[in-house]
Length: 511
Image 1 (cartoon, rainbow, N blue to C red):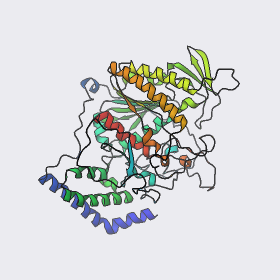
Image 2 (cartoon, one colour):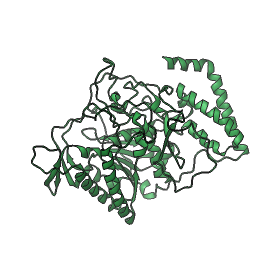
Image 3 (cartoon, helix red, strand yellow):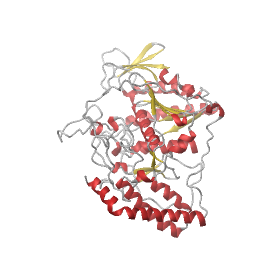
Image 4 (cartoon, rainbow, N blue to C red):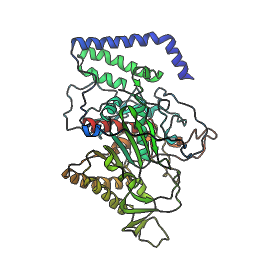
């Protein structure tokens, strides 16, 4: 009610102030363009990826989808949307927390080629996320933290900032133009599904350019006296816009709604199409990347060990592999599950299989073998597109794990060095980096474009970004002390995972 009252109040009494501020700002930009010869607002990104062969690809035809997806949890009917409030007091944006306020642009631009997009800090972002659950209907219930009643909002007002270079915000229109007639796929487990929803939300209902960051970037070409004047005005406007949700009138533009054109029987693999661009994004369910028989329900309860074929690739993704222009491949935590391992159609051992009279091999044995087989397939495939291999992501369970009451109660990003990567995450990442290094050398020899996405540092400091108990709809509505399942592995949407897309766009298009 407070937020609604404030909106009405602003509309009634302060509308003229907002208009005057916008007019003053635009007048300043016009003055700058006329007398100081500033550069254009957006960099000229070459569309070198679209060649004549790819442009001739036939559009993806839609299919009728009438069957509703299976319900995984019994929850009350949710409200339609939840507005984004002003950052709460829990969002500590002081210099002692993670970073100072938005810095004045440096006179010296970092040299190209020295940019490490994966080493940086989370800095305050007054304008907030690029979408909400009111602008995107594609958010899965378990990650829809605002709808599910999460009470704090500070986690929404941070953005990733690499230390030695500038990272432009995701530009949906530019991305779609470059990806015309292209095919993307995100291949892996539920984190890949989490990510594809983030990307689709930004593309379907998005901000062309984050208001404050766009303006601050443009101020780099201003004389110092004008820059100081307009910096204060921009930050005030960005704050007011975020609070009153008026940002949609300034910079949120509907680009195009993604159309779901395919799903498998279990609704785990899906494909979406952007008709105006003949661009498709697929989420391909393949948690092991190799062939596996899984006996597990949607809540993670297993009735038997996974039967894992370490020398047979999962055809869910290999059958589509050569037809994809871009893909992000990942795996990881599923290898920690109880499993029986097969090679050459023969059982060779297991992991967590008491009473089976089999040799305990451990998950590292299986992970190294499976990942080596996958990476060798990629490195020798002569694929002509761009392939990203993403390392597994850290979780932030405390006081237990997923299955035994673990939780994650933090509401602000962690300071550098405050959180250490867990031993299991270290082991998985060590295997991933070792196998990638071997494959990348072979890929380079074969002219394959293989790149690494290692978001470990980016996510390790965001224990506040998980759904926690809000994977369910209003979990404490009936009992404030209820014991509920916590999710400290996946990410709220909107949330920290959205900034993966900034990095990926920079690597795929500008890199």
